[in-house]
Image (cartoon, rainbow, N blue to C red; front, side, top):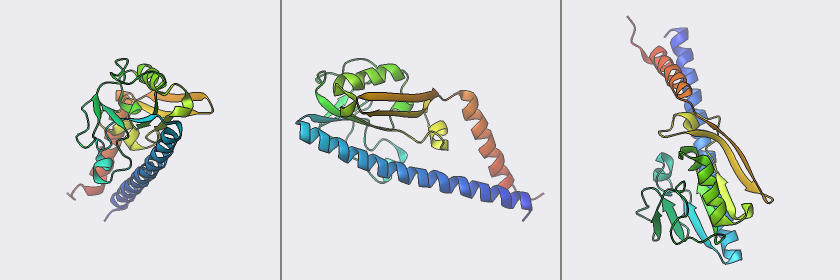
Amino acid sequence: MSVSKLAARVILGYVGLVESAAALTRHRERTRVYQAAAQRAAALGRQLVVIGDPDAGFHTRLMRAYGCGDVCVDLNGCAKCPVTRIADITDGPIADIADNSAVVFVSCVLEYVDDLEAALREIARIAGSPENAFIVNVQPWTLTATLYPGARWRGSVSAANGETSVDMQPVSLEEKLLLTGALGAALAAAFWPRP
């Protein structure tokens, strides 16, 4: 095996290991933050609204990280959640969820919305204050943040201490093409048959 082929395989193995570790970390973070949101909802006597189907992502289908809450809001609904609202959080008030009425848990959803500001407004409307919004993001440095189907934003949104901090940047087509090309070149270098 040539040095370039071996190097390409080592690089691809490293990338796979890093992405897997990031997915495991994200799974743990989702579970931890969901539990904190559920505890806050119980302490305040508010419903827990989960935005995004808990089983919609590739990894969450394999191993669920969080539950449905009292109400699950998703574009396509959630077959396993007992109470689901089919809605787009960027389209304004979600039916039957009043202003300042719930604790909101959002896991890896904001990266895929068309209108980030509208989504944040709806979360703020339902939660009433940043202390009632619990948000988990895809780590912005991962390939998943850029290449996962439908990814539009990369960064983080956090709500704490009475403030919401937003640091999200659009994911450009050029970035997607560049990363896809680099991965394709590495795969070709690693596994192209000898002449």
